[in-house]
Amino acid sequence: MKKVLVLGSGAREVAITRSVSQSSIKNAIFCISKDINPQINDICEDYHVCDISDIGNVVSYSKEKEIDLVIVGPENPLASGVVNALERAGVKCVGPKKEVAMIETSKSFARMIVDLCCPEKNPQRKEFVSIGGVKNFMEILGGEYVIKFDGLMGGKGVRVSGEHLKNINEGLNYANEIVSGGGKFLVEEKLIGEEFSLMSFVDGKTCKHMPVVQDHKRAFDGDTGPNTGGMGTYSFGNHSLPFLTKEDILEAQKTNELVAKQLLKHTGSPYVGVLYGGFMLTKNGVKVIEYNARFGDPEAMNVLSILKSDFLSICISLIEGKLEKEEVLFDELATVCKYVVPVGYPNNPAKGFEVFCDQNDPSLFLASVMLKNQKLLACGSRTAAVIGKNKDIWKAEAFSEEGVSNISGKLFHRKDIGTKDLIDSRVKRMKELLG
Image (cartoon, rainbow, N blue to C red):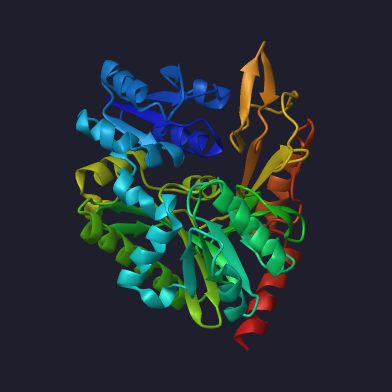
């Protein structure tokens, strides 16, 4: 019997707990989070309510319950060093230690690691702790720039010229906001192309790659509105995307492998867990946008819903350094995942309202919700996701669209994710860019 503790209570953690529960290895699942997600609660042996970044509490609970393995869902506990503390206490973790999790928690650290192993994948950039020299560098970049807060902001710390920032003055205002809060930031060359995500299981030495997925950060249809934690995702049955070649995917896979090796070389700590590379295909090849140190959300729902191999067996091979011998296979199915989010999300979301849905639907993944007096209430962040899967992506999209449309409350979602019109427009744009 393997006792598995999952940290976190979002849709990603629903996908993780379900995948563990379906293992052929006998297991008991435990969860720690600040709110009880009813879908996780239904699977769990025990649910402990506390702040998942409260390291002392997490460690003492793990020891009390004699946990064999901890799977860390979100990034904040990784940044807090929860893996370091658990492993000191003798508890193995699927998730990197603090010093290697910096690949996500510090944008400047990530760029430095990429510089050391594959510098051609980085855009032109500069790091700043004050406003001095920022305007000059923006002008050098021809007014085409991206400002990135050098830390965790839940996917909302990036502002792009021409999209979120209309001119250099607006860019300087955002830079000033960061500086006045005591933060540092990067100004990077704006990359033009199509984004895609590639996640890899890593045991410190070996990488086993997952299907490529495309995320949609902007809040509204047609890729408009503010950045969010991710409004939805899609993947194709051939585990590629229609604007990518086999060579593009191999290039991204090789980059993840080089980064994992460089992290060990630079920090002395093996990277154990899921390494998430955010890439962009440009006319100058595949470039790195960012790295995350855990499963993406929504991407976890796409890949775990089609994982053929035993997820718990993969997790055990990660912590034992035996991933090379593990078979990691996925069904050849397309997936479309769409989130419903509160009206006003992300800047001023409604919260505390009741959400009506079929909690027993296996295609539904509850996220930022809580149970109160037998009512399901929205907590203000992304509320729930629905995954559609089928050999035909348009059928997968139709299933997902019908599913999210059946969830009621003060909610909205992007109707265009995974649709033929949106995907065709991206393929066309990429063809024009590549000439």
